[in-house]
Image (tube, rainbow, N blue to C red; front, top):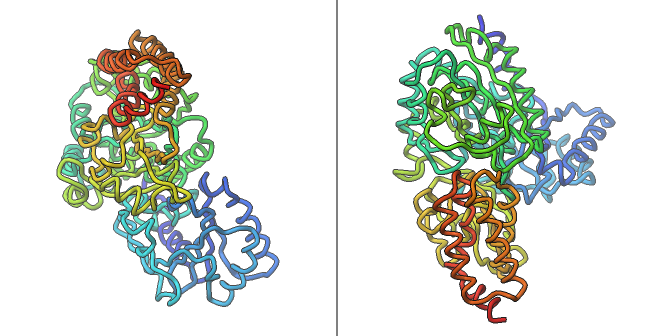
Length: 561
């Protein structure tokens, strides 16, 4: 039967891989782990195991999010908890293998232990009784305030092995949607969850799907926006590298709900590992009948292909992204028509576009129910959000917390404040189009409305921390320079306005600014924000407006000097 070709057997095989009857060592080999030598650690462990003749399984996994502590290595000994080792180097390989051979772990490299892990998709893995000397996962400050929903499997399963995804409940939600629910019922569940788009202004996902479903036409499309272009943001990259099948599954469910026959993942070419693992995931899904014709014997046909972009920041805007897929210059067009409208989407067909994180939430919502999801976060901001916590912060990494969690919790409790003992001065959220938020506002909740009130945006979820030595005028200039270079040039406010904003900031930074330049700067930024065609121009002035509002004294000092 299509959609069931060997799935039950592969699920059993996956469970045997995740919790085998022999020791298992898994090395974190997402981009962050590889960048600091995880691949060398893997090869050295492989060499030591082969030379010793030990019956130890060696495999790879993705990133748990604690990027500061990479390379991370997971050790599973039958009857014992999964143990996470941190800061592992090639010099540790012999000691790790010796300890595992003896049924122990190298305590000088231990970060935490995990006796059981709830993968949120209806599967809980029970590993075994604990190690007395090893702290539990929930006692590690970086993890203690987090709630893993989107990152539920990252760092635990092999992202290149469909068996392991099936073992933790993978594709059960897709099967439930296609065989037990009508398309309308799927949309109702997503609406009940309150899920908002995780890549921009937070438009209600269920409402977008319902609009597209009502449209008529011979073809509809679903698109994943994986064009993650914000400096310092890598949430989507890790989600694709560490658990690619959850994206594929989410798109299957969404396509069924709106009646789409084809899906496209628009992915920047600068993410080669994500491309490789997604291509493998799509191929494996096709082999099992999870993509293609007559999925789960329901008569539903759907397939996915990858389209690589050249890294233009403006192509993160929905209409510019669609233009790029069509082979045109990536420039936005006015709305209406919206992408969901007949005549407004890809090739003029109704199209649903969501970003990676939005799609990855869908299987959990369908599996556990919209009400379950809505209990996380706040009334208007349900669920969790993944943030990349980077910059001048002590604990750099990916953080997943319920929406509404305060910046204080994220920066100080999870991130441990400024790096190298320095004081934090501000954060910028939402990428180059986000605003700079001073520490005095850090008790604010991280949600869409609160960020808008202080002049910033959620965006895809980047949080860049700046310390006491940061010059805020220079920060504004940096981001305006970025936005100027990435502007498509189609509309005058963005093309010319950003260029003149940059000239003014350069003048002020050079010590040649005058008092009236600050008034001109503010007026210019406000005009660009109100009159630009697309989201790039409308939000690009945010760094200027917020630094003028919260750090005016630094501009005044530059002008006076």
